[in-house]
Every structure is written in structure tokens, then in C-alpha cells.
Length: 267
Length: 183
Image (cartoon, rainbow over all chains, first blue to last red; front, side):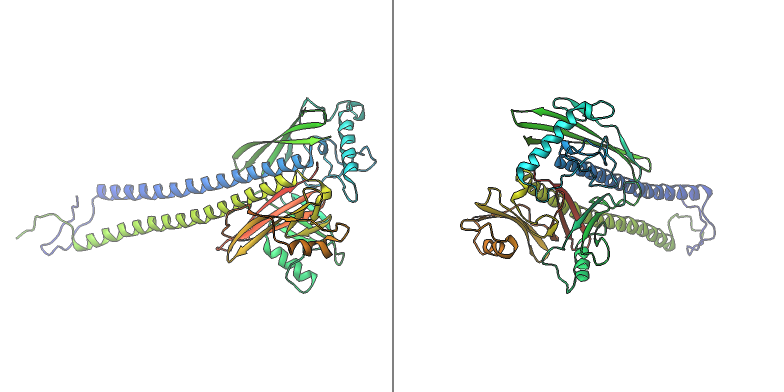
């Protein structure tokens, strides 16, 4: 292989041939490219996995939200007067409704019977086409309702805000409210933050900025679609199937997740 | 006499071995770092899954109770423990977390509410009385989680359940879910 000329004592008097140099450089280049490729593929896989998992969590959270709120709460646009004269307000200010809005029941002081009556009224109202400008019911038992796709280019930050707590949880360390608030925030990752709504008001809020398990550093292009069907199981038991389809795209990576849930309601 | 035998000099061998050693070291370092990263990530994912499963159990039970049967947190409050009476005052169910060192475990405990005067305030009187009793049922609802963990319940326009934990590596893990007691 080597063509270096040597003296009897082994001293090198020549150099490598061109072929040897080319072969060596090629081998080095192949090894370097191989290692770099492993790195690149590994990082790309990790990113894709983290984004995919986050999209899945978002889908799961939306499903829980809409299932928990109940199909009867996703039928109205925010600001629409409700049958009892109140105004529907969104619990998730930065999350656009897929079609119509949703209402979270104000339960302060309401009895169980009053809540049931209220929900019943909402169902009846939603099924009555004449209540809506386009003369279309917003929900009807036995029919499939598919929302329009709700695009939202910048879901983060402040995806979810709950405001109006009149105290911090008991058992927090700290001598005053500020210290307790600091200690509460120290328990949580930076993506979940507790704060006072205004100085000295004593009213607190929590803002959930991102979804576990990974912190998303880029603004995702996310849209979702909601599919709801209802079935009457017996005289007063209804079953609802809620499907959330989340489409998530960031830097060329695209993921679609579909999660389904079933919930029952007794009238 | 002319030396016609072919071979490597000591310098060539040393340089070659040095280069090979460098490549092996680089690959080994890469492999070790990747393994460490994967181990941390796996630990995080395992804790996350534990949180998710635990909260799912709590959410499922909460979805089956009435709003009026929630004892703690009450409306517009937050608490580290959850209390409710699933059967209109016969028993009280408590979900709370027990931490030992850096390990945590969530328990579901059931207490008899016999003799409890429900006209008394929960926070001022009944809570202490219930906690003074031996639970009739005491079961873990999570594995032993390798993170110093906390549960937080907030009740306003529905209940939000937070579970957060700090791993040995100081990384924080969280899971959030919603529950609307409704039927």
C-alpha cells in the first residue's frame, strides 16, 4: 500500500500517493457523513415524536374539554343569548369554536334540578331550527353534526385561562399571599402560571400556556374539527359520541390525530 | 544494503491508532450521551403516563357524581386534596398524594360519614372529623411515581385537575385534565 521510500533506518523520505490520499479522504468522508446522518435522523425523529405526542395531547385535551362540557355546550357562538337570558361565554378565550360556541354552566347556587332543567332547555333550544338565523338546528338527536375546520395559526400562548379563584390552596408554605403564590408557581413548570388578576384584588387565575409533555418552541399551524352524534338509549338516557380531529403542521411535519370519546347524559 | 521489505513505521502505527481511537471515542461519547438522554426521556414519559392514568381514574369517578356532592374544593377554590360524597352523605371519598423521599403515590380513601352533621361547615368542622376516622377503604390509584409530585384541584366552571412532579434531574413534568361532574 504505502509507497513511501525509506532508508535502512526506516526514515520516511517520500509521501503518500494520490490514490492513497483519495482513498483515505473518501473513507474519512464516509465515516463523517455516516455519523452526521445518524445525528440528523435522530434529531428529526425526536422532533417528530415530540411534536406528534404534543398534537396527541392537544387532541386528547380538546376531547376531554368538549366531552366534559357536553355536546349541549358546544352549540352556540360566544355572545349568543341563551334561553335563560344569560350570555354564553367561552372558557378557552384563545380557542375558536369549530362551529358555534360553547357555554360553561354557571353553577353558583344552582340546585341539581335547576341544572338539569337548564341543560334540557339548551338541548331543546339547539334542536329548534327556528332559533337560528340560518334555520338550521345546531344539534339533534340521531343526526351527525360535523363542524367546519377551525384553523388557528397561533394556539400558544395562553391557550387556556381560568379566572376567578378567591383564594390560594390551603397548605402552601409562605408568610403572606405573595410568598404563597411564588411557592405555588415553583411547583409547576413554566408553562403553567398562577397570578393575581389585579393588584390587591385577591382574585387569582391560572394560565396554561402549553401542553405536556413537551414545550413547543415553534408556533404550530393547528386546526381541528369536531364531530358529534347523539343516540337515545332509553326514555331518559342519551349517549353522545364526540370525535376530535386535530391536524397539526410545523416546519413541514404534518400529523393528524383522531380521538373519540363517548359520554352519557340522563335527562 | 538496500532495505526492500515493506511495512509501517512506528510513527505511522501510532498515528493510525490515534485516529482510530479518536473515532472510537467520538462514537462512544455519542452513544453514551444518547443513552443518557433516552433514559431521561423514558423516565419523563413513564412519569407522564402515570400522571395520565391516575388523573383518568379520578376524572372517571368525578364524571359520575353530582356537583352538589363535591366537598373540597368548593366553588371558586383550589385544593391539594379532593373530597366528595358519592352517595349523598353516607361516605366520603378522598383523593390525595403521599410522598416518601422522591417517590409519590396517589391514594383513594373512603371514610364512613355516619353521624356527620352536614349542616356544619365542611372546612371548619366536618373535614377534621372525617380525617380523624380510619378509612374503610384505602387503595393506591397510581404506581409509585419516581418524582416528588403534587395534585391540585381547581373548581370554577368545572373542575381542572393538575398533577405535577419534579424528577431527580429537576425536570418538571405535568399533566392537566378537566372534569365536569354533571349527572
